[in-house]
Length: 55
Image 1 (tube, rainbow, N blue to C red):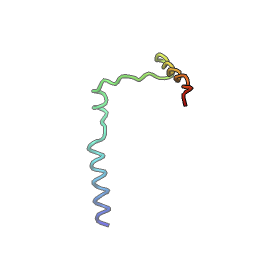
Image 2: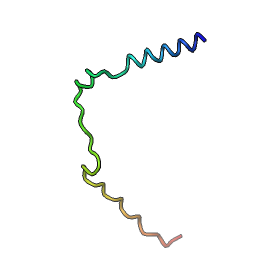
Image 3: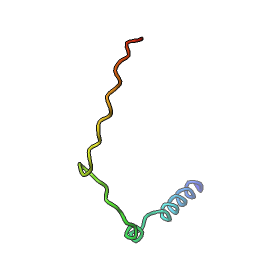
Image 4: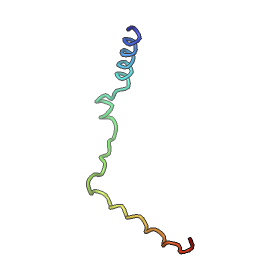
């Protein structure tokens, strides 16, 4: 039971230390990502090579 409690306390402590803060998020320059047709279309792959008749 003590190991479970120690594990839970450790997990919450580490997650609290490494979590994002609003001040940290405001200080970073966040660039919006392109979405839903805002970028050039991806060209299709090249056609496969013709089949070789020497099997």
